[in-house]
Length: 357
Image (tube, rainbow, N blue to C red; front, side, top):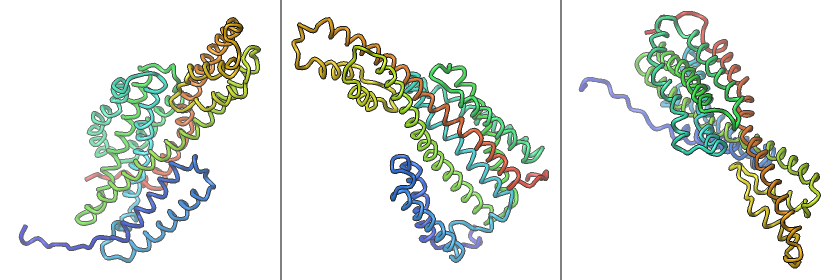
């Protein structure tokens, strides 16, 4: 150890700064885009800032002596395929691991502990299958395991696209197992592929870049899926409001329907809970607050029953529609998963059987 050559390298402060700004800008606009508007001033500020910081990052990395990322790594197609596969694999995995527990607790009424147990098969499958996949890769190469991984995750996403509030625990566990198996094929294969063509300093550098870009996939997954879910829920919320309007138009007893509809719109949120007491009290007070309650008891009771029926009906519709947002989101992501599989195989992984070291 005493005779080993010491390598001194300065910190790449410029690269660190511009990479941080780039990732911050991209993540921020993905999370807040629905709220701001994708063509708003804030959105365009993030687009421009992210684009410029990315350009400056590349400019700096090509000129400093000790760059954060050695771009010569990306000349190797096998390494490029490995980081693309790992990043997209994490993107589609985290998209489920972050949102599925919310669906189980908010829309199926399960406790946090029950939700945790239901998604545990994802981690269990990854733990059990990763070592098996590593042995398979050494025998048959990279292509087949990557195909199996993306196809298995695709089946899981197809099942997720059918997700409703009536979905059973058995269905949840099945799709979680498939998701974990598919991801284990991708992550084991990409990890081995990322080290296959490098030695020494390039090997160490490749693993740093591999880990960083894998983390980027995780961060972007949260931003993309949460932002997309918000957009889906806003769409479904409008459908519920339209449904509530139709129910009110058929009612002959309920008065001040516009006020009630506005209140309904305000209390339908992502938690899928309508404040029934607030709806009933507010509507009855607006109609009978200035009248003699004793003279209108029968009418008040009839209106109250009508309101209770209205709230129960709209609450049921809201629960179904808002829960449906999750299935619609995964259904939208389904074709992109296979697009990523295509790009990973045809653009990055060479179609040859390599002997894995």
